[in-house]
Image 1 (tube, rainbow, N blue to C red):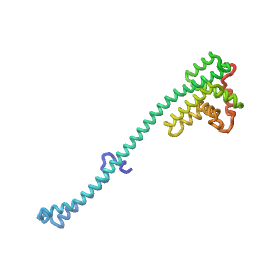
Image 2 (cartoon, helix red, strand yellow):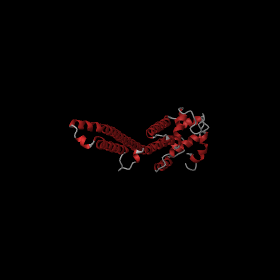
Image 3 (tube, rainbow, N blue to C red):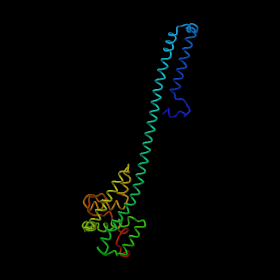
Image 4 (spheres, one colour):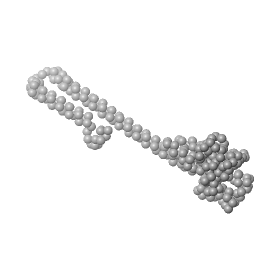
Length: 264
Protein backbone atom coordinates (compact mmCIF):
# COMPACT_ATOMS: atom_id res chain seq x y z
CA UNK A 1 0.00 0.00 0.00
CA UNK A 2 2.83 2.42 0.87
CA UNK A 3 4.55 1.60 -2.41
CA UNK A 4 1.49 2.68 -4.39
CA UNK A 5 1.52 6.08 -2.64
CA UNK A 6 5.03 7.02 -3.89
CA UNK A 7 5.01 9.55 -6.74
CA UNK A 8 5.81 8.01 -10.14
CA UNK A 9 9.24 9.80 -10.35
CA UNK A 10 10.36 8.89 -6.77
CA UNK A 11 12.80 6.11 -5.97
CA UNK A 12 11.63 2.96 -4.28
CA UNK A 13 12.58 2.85 -0.61
CA UNK A 14 14.62 -0.30 -1.24
CA UNK A 15 16.80 1.56 -3.76
CA UNK A 16 17.22 4.44 -1.31
CA UNK A 17 18.16 1.99 1.43
CA UNK A 18 20.66 0.19 -0.82
CA UNK A 19 22.30 3.43 -1.96
CA UNK A 20 22.56 4.64 1.63
CA UNK A 21 24.16 1.41 2.87
CA UNK A 22 26.49 1.33 -0.14
CA UNK A 23 27.61 4.93 0.45
CA UNK A 24 28.21 4.30 4.15
CA UNK A 25 30.06 1.05 3.43
CA UNK A 26 32.32 2.59 0.79
CA UNK A 27 32.90 5.64 2.98
CA UNK A 28 33.84 3.43 5.92
CA UNK A 29 36.19 1.44 3.66
CA UNK A 30 37.94 4.60 2.47
CA UNK A 31 38.34 5.82 6.04
CA UNK A 32 39.78 2.43 6.98
CA UNK A 33 42.25 2.57 4.10
CA UNK A 34 43.35 6.14 4.62
CA UNK A 35 43.36 6.37 8.43
CA UNK A 36 44.29 2.87 9.56
CA UNK A 37 46.06 1.04 6.76
CA UNK A 38 47.43 4.06 4.95
CA UNK A 39 46.98 4.71 1.25
CA UNK A 40 50.68 4.32 0.36
CA UNK A 41 50.96 1.07 2.28
CA UNK A 42 47.80 -0.24 0.63
CA UNK A 43 49.18 0.50 -2.84
CA UNK A 44 52.40 -1.28 -1.92
CA UNK A 45 50.55 -4.55 -1.29
CA UNK A 46 50.79 -7.35 -3.85
CA UNK A 47 48.13 -7.37 -6.54
CA UNK A 48 46.62 -10.61 -5.19
CA UNK A 49 46.21 -9.07 -1.73
CA UNK A 50 44.59 -5.96 -3.17
CA UNK A 51 42.19 -8.18 -5.18
CA UNK A 52 41.32 -10.19 -2.07
CA UNK A 53 40.67 -7.00 -0.16
CA UNK A 54 38.26 -5.64 -2.76
CA UNK A 55 36.61 -9.03 -3.10
CA UNK A 56 35.92 -9.18 0.63
CA UNK A 57 34.95 -5.51 0.80
CA UNK A 58 32.39 -5.63 -2.00
CA UNK A 59 30.95 -9.12 -1.36
CA UNK A 60 28.45 -7.82 1.26
CA UNK A 61 27.36 -5.08 -1.14
CA UNK A 62 26.87 -7.62 -3.91
CA UNK A 63 24.74 -9.74 -1.62
CA UNK A 64 22.79 -6.66 -0.50
CA UNK A 65 21.96 -5.65 -4.08
CA UNK A 66 21.09 -9.24 -4.95
CA UNK A 67 18.51 -9.27 -2.15
CA UNK A 68 17.22 -5.81 -3.16
CA UNK A 69 16.93 -6.96 -6.78
CA UNK A 70 15.00 -10.03 -5.67
CA UNK A 71 12.47 -7.97 -3.73
CA UNK A 72 12.20 -5.44 -6.55
CA UNK A 73 11.47 -8.24 -8.98
CA UNK A 74 8.90 -9.67 -6.56
CA UNK A 75 7.27 -6.25 -6.35
CA UNK A 76 7.04 -6.05 -10.16
CA UNK A 77 5.61 -9.57 -10.35
CA UNK A 78 3.01 -8.66 -7.70
CA UNK A 79 2.11 -5.48 -9.57
CA UNK A 80 1.80 -7.39 -12.85
CA UNK A 81 -0.33 -10.05 -11.18
CA UNK A 82 -2.58 -7.37 -9.72
CA UNK A 83 -2.90 -5.69 -13.12
CA UNK A 84 -3.74 -8.99 -14.80
CA UNK A 85 -6.33 -9.74 -12.09
CA UNK A 86 -7.93 -6.33 -12.57
CA UNK A 87 -7.96 -6.86 -16.32
CA UNK A 88 -9.64 -10.24 -15.88
CA UNK A 89 -12.28 -8.74 -13.61
CA UNK A 90 -12.88 -5.96 -16.11
CA UNK A 91 -13.18 -8.52 -18.91
CA UNK A 92 -15.65 -10.57 -16.86
CA UNK A 93 -17.71 -7.44 -16.14
CA UNK A 94 -17.75 -6.54 -19.83
CA UNK A 95 -18.72 -10.09 -20.72
CA UNK A 96 -21.50 -10.11 -18.13
CA UNK A 97 -22.69 -6.69 -19.33
CA UNK A 98 -22.75 -7.97 -22.91
CA UNK A 99 -24.65 -11.09 -21.87
CA UNK A 100 -27.15 -8.98 -19.95
CA UNK A 101 -27.70 -6.74 -22.96
CA UNK A 102 -28.30 -9.81 -25.10
CA UNK A 103 -30.63 -11.25 -22.47
CA UNK A 104 -32.79 -8.13 -22.25
CA UNK A 105 -33.08 -8.05 -26.04
CA UNK A 106 -34.13 -11.69 -25.88
CA UNK A 107 -36.52 -10.87 -23.03
CA UNK A 108 -38.44 -8.44 -25.23
CA UNK A 109 -38.83 -11.07 -27.94
CA UNK A 110 -39.89 -13.76 -25.47
CA UNK A 111 -42.42 -11.40 -23.84
CA UNK A 112 -43.96 -11.00 -27.30
CA UNK A 113 -44.06 -14.77 -27.66
CA UNK A 114 -45.69 -15.21 -24.23
CA UNK A 115 -48.26 -12.56 -25.15
CA UNK A 116 -49.06 -14.41 -28.38
CA UNK A 117 -49.48 -17.72 -26.54
CA UNK A 118 -51.85 -16.06 -24.07
CA UNK A 119 -53.73 -14.42 -26.97
CA UNK A 120 -54.41 -17.74 -28.70
CA UNK A 121 -55.39 -19.27 -25.36
CA UNK A 122 -57.74 -16.36 -24.73
CA UNK A 123 -59.49 -16.66 -28.11
CA UNK A 124 -59.83 -20.42 -27.67
CA UNK A 125 -61.78 -19.72 -24.46
CA UNK A 126 -63.80 -16.63 -25.36
CA UNK A 127 -63.75 -16.66 -29.17
CA UNK A 128 -66.09 -18.29 -31.66
CA UNK A 129 -64.67 -21.72 -30.88
CA UNK A 130 -65.25 -21.14 -27.16
CA UNK A 131 -67.94 -19.18 -25.37
CA UNK A 132 -68.38 -16.72 -28.25
CA UNK A 133 -68.11 -13.70 -25.96
CA UNK A 134 -65.36 -12.12 -28.06
CA UNK A 135 -65.95 -11.64 -31.77
CA UNK A 136 -63.27 -11.94 -34.42
CA UNK A 137 -63.32 -8.18 -34.95
CA UNK A 138 -62.93 -7.55 -31.23
CA UNK A 139 -60.05 -10.04 -31.05
CA UNK A 140 -58.34 -8.33 -34.00
CA UNK A 141 -58.68 -4.98 -32.24
CA UNK A 142 -57.17 -6.40 -29.07
CA UNK A 143 -54.35 -8.01 -31.05
CA UNK A 144 -53.61 -4.67 -32.67
CA UNK A 145 -53.54 -3.01 -29.24
CA UNK A 146 -51.18 -5.68 -27.90
CA UNK A 147 -48.85 -5.36 -30.90
CA UNK A 148 -48.41 -1.61 -30.33
CA UNK A 149 -46.60 -2.12 -27.04
CA UNK A 150 -48.93 -3.78 -24.52
CA UNK A 151 -47.36 -7.24 -24.69
CA UNK A 152 -49.05 -8.48 -21.51
CA UNK A 153 -52.61 -7.50 -22.51
CA UNK A 154 -53.85 -11.06 -23.02
CA UNK A 155 -51.80 -12.34 -20.10
CA UNK A 156 -53.62 -9.91 -17.80
CA UNK A 157 -56.96 -10.94 -19.27
CA UNK A 158 -56.23 -14.60 -18.60
CA UNK A 159 -55.26 -13.71 -15.02
CA UNK A 160 -58.54 -11.82 -14.62
CA UNK A 161 -60.47 -14.77 -16.05
CA UNK A 162 -58.87 -17.00 -13.40
CA UNK A 163 -59.73 -14.40 -10.75
CA UNK A 164 -63.39 -14.48 -11.81
CA UNK A 165 -63.40 -18.22 -11.14
CA UNK A 166 -61.48 -17.93 -7.88
CA UNK A 167 -64.16 -19.77 -5.88
CA UNK A 168 -64.40 -22.65 -8.35
CA UNK A 169 -61.14 -24.59 -8.82
CA UNK A 170 -62.75 -26.84 -11.44
CA UNK A 171 -63.77 -23.82 -13.49
CA UNK A 172 -60.20 -22.52 -13.33
CA UNK A 173 -58.90 -25.89 -14.48
CA UNK A 174 -61.45 -25.90 -17.30
CA UNK A 175 -60.27 -22.41 -18.30
CA UNK A 176 -56.62 -23.39 -18.46
CA UNK A 177 -56.60 -27.13 -19.23
CA UNK A 178 -60.20 -27.92 -20.26
CA UNK A 179 -59.38 -28.88 -23.85
CA UNK A 180 -56.34 -30.23 -25.61
CA UNK A 181 -55.84 -26.83 -27.29
CA UNK A 182 -55.96 -24.96 -23.97
CA UNK A 183 -53.65 -27.49 -22.33
CA UNK A 184 -51.20 -27.11 -25.20
CA UNK A 185 -51.23 -23.32 -24.85
CA UNK A 186 -50.70 -23.60 -21.08
CA UNK A 187 -47.82 -26.03 -21.49
CA UNK A 188 -46.24 -23.82 -24.16
CA UNK A 189 -46.44 -20.83 -21.81
CA UNK A 190 -44.90 -22.79 -18.94
CA UNK A 191 -42.11 -24.17 -21.11
CA UNK A 192 -41.27 -20.78 -22.65
CA UNK A 193 -41.28 -18.99 -19.29
CA UNK A 194 -39.12 -21.73 -17.74
CA UNK A 195 -36.54 -21.23 -20.47
CA UNK A 196 -36.67 -17.49 -19.82
CA UNK A 197 -35.95 -18.11 -16.13
CA UNK A 198 -33.06 -20.44 -17.01
CA UNK A 199 -31.57 -17.76 -19.26
CA UNK A 200 -31.97 -15.18 -16.47
CA UNK A 201 -29.91 -17.31 -14.07
CA UNK A 202 -26.87 -17.14 -16.37
CA UNK A 203 -26.76 -13.32 -16.23
CA UNK A 204 -28.38 -12.68 -12.85
CA UNK A 205 -25.78 -12.69 -10.07
CA UNK A 206 -28.07 -11.54 -7.26
CA UNK A 207 -31.43 -13.04 -8.26
CA UNK A 208 -33.10 -9.69 -8.91
CA UNK A 209 -34.03 -10.41 -12.53
CA UNK A 210 -35.56 -13.78 -11.64
CA UNK A 211 -37.54 -12.25 -8.78
CA UNK A 212 -38.74 -9.44 -11.03
CA UNK A 213 -39.90 -11.93 -13.64
CA UNK A 214 -41.71 -14.15 -11.15
CA UNK A 215 -43.14 -11.59 -8.74
CA UNK A 216 -43.17 -8.31 -10.63
CA UNK A 217 -44.62 -9.15 -14.02
CA UNK A 218 -47.98 -10.28 -15.31
CA UNK A 219 -46.31 -13.18 -17.12
CA UNK A 220 -44.70 -14.34 -13.88
CA UNK A 221 -48.04 -14.24 -12.06
CA UNK A 222 -49.77 -16.17 -14.85
CA UNK A 223 -46.90 -18.67 -14.83
CA UNK A 224 -47.43 -19.30 -11.11
CA UNK A 225 -51.17 -19.70 -11.65
CA UNK A 226 -50.53 -22.30 -14.35
CA UNK A 227 -48.09 -24.17 -12.11
CA UNK A 228 -50.59 -24.05 -9.25
CA UNK A 229 -53.45 -25.38 -11.37
CA UNK A 230 -51.26 -28.05 -12.98
CA UNK A 231 -50.33 -29.31 -9.51
CA UNK A 232 -46.61 -28.43 -9.61
CA UNK A 233 -46.98 -25.34 -7.40
CA UNK A 234 -48.76 -26.22 -4.10
CA UNK A 235 -49.08 -22.63 -2.88
CA UNK A 236 -51.47 -19.93 -3.91
CA UNK A 237 -49.37 -17.77 -6.28
CA UNK A 238 -50.22 -14.54 -4.48
CA UNK A 239 -51.08 -15.22 -0.86
CA UNK A 240 -48.71 -18.13 -0.28
CA UNK A 241 -51.51 -20.12 1.41
CA UNK A 242 -52.29 -23.75 0.64
CA UNK A 243 -55.54 -23.11 -1.13
CA UNK A 244 -57.26 -24.07 -4.36
CA UNK A 245 -59.09 -20.75 -4.61
CA UNK A 246 -57.66 -17.55 -6.04
CA UNK A 247 -59.23 -15.16 -3.53
CA UNK A 248 -56.16 -12.94 -3.71
CA UNK A 249 -57.19 -11.94 -7.24
CA UNK A 250 -60.45 -10.33 -6.14
CA UNK A 251 -58.99 -6.83 -5.94
CA UNK A 252 -57.98 -7.07 -9.62
CA UNK A 253 -61.28 -8.40 -10.93
CA UNK A 254 -63.06 -5.14 -11.74
CA UNK A 255 -59.94 -3.61 -13.30
CA UNK A 256 -58.86 -6.58 -15.42
CA UNK A 257 -62.22 -8.22 -16.33
CA UNK A 258 -61.63 -9.66 -19.81
CA UNK A 259 -65.28 -10.00 -20.88
CA UNK A 260 -67.16 -6.93 -19.65
CA UNK A 261 -70.42 -6.46 -21.46
CA UNK A 262 -69.77 -2.88 -22.51
CA UNK A 263 -66.38 -3.69 -23.99
CA UNK A 264 -67.17 -6.86 -25.82
